[in-house]
Length: 208
Image (cartoon, rainbow, N blue to C red; front, side, top):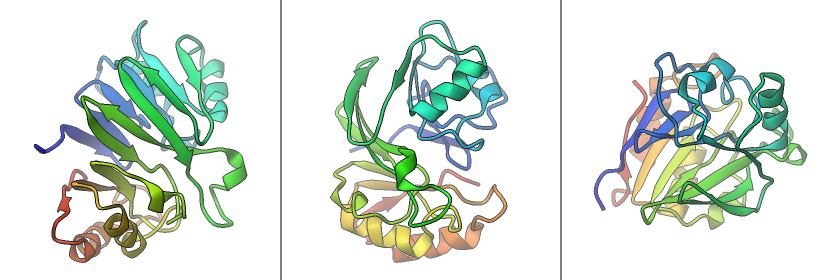
């Protein structure tokens, strides 16, 4: 498998194949999104200005109910597909599956219904974990490209993320959710994560 075309604007603001966006945040340039996937409604995952910079009439949005409410208040009401954990769907030729994304007893509670996604794009599976701890549900994921938070505080830390990654065994792993927001790890988290990953898993660094 060749290296995936994944870019990270910053933090957890992800772009796949130049037109599929996940958790748009801090996007300053105009883009043309085919699809937007939103894991939850926190400001660093749902940034209205960023969404307006990439939105077109045909853009399909897949998001949680709390996210849809914020979009609606901003006047974004078309082509919205609301999801809950453990659901399947398809938009723009992209098959998606959701799973619960949560912390144990803080910040992102399981009952909030926040999600992660596994997207199948051109027969390649991309899993975006969202803001989550190292949960039992993650251990069941099967994927080719794993985007996993390592920042600590609001998510699992680098060591926990490495342990989960080594269980999932993707072909590629991309650490996210660090080196930008106060309270998350800096480059030291990235260094530790890379050190702990099994050698048959390729680590791609997209946050600088």
